[in-house]
Image (tube, rainbow, N blue to C red; front, side, top):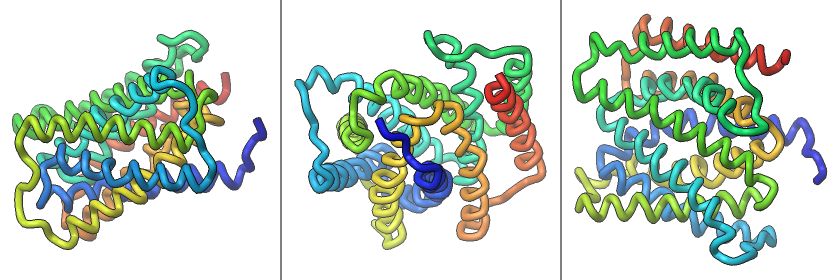
Length: 294
């Protein structure tokens, strides 16, 4: 397999960093009109045929029996059904920027789970120090001694979703060479959409308010850029970089989300949030330094 250029890898990393940082704002504005599970399911219901059409244009084929694709569908349930569903639901109770800050623990979750799988590097002393520092920062950021019950539950759900996301990313590392990244992206979106829309149907909820123009704009941004463009870039990167290295986009996502939330939605940015996030990123840096130097 021909190695991609540094430019293409850099552009893909920039895409997931900036686009996924912007999605938290798009999620927040859409939740004024849509139920969270219906909203995220509709996002991927729209994105799946767009990606399928692009695959057809590029000549990408979905080959083999359905059972061959079961691992990809499983990734879709984890990434889309569980993780995206959790984030959308949590943003009904949390600010968009704050939610993005919580997601910044993703590299720590990936590093914590990696040693459990054969072939993945274990953690040394510096790595474990990074885990301890990072999760100490997470506790400070969540601040359970200050948070209300609903906000605390939502924050914990977001943090736990990073562990599920890490498991999915490591799973992708196992199957990445068996599937075209575009085909994998399309299949996992479809699987996640089915799960989420089924959940929304069971709940019997779709709309929570009038459908506003900015909610529709948020939905379209999520379907086209947040789903098709960003997920395609993400799976492309996972074919060539380690899951922990790819997850370092969590450095940039919160900065984008905080800026947009503060400027466009008037969300608060407190000194505690900034300081706690700095501690988390110190932990992430310790983990990444050990992996780079090992």
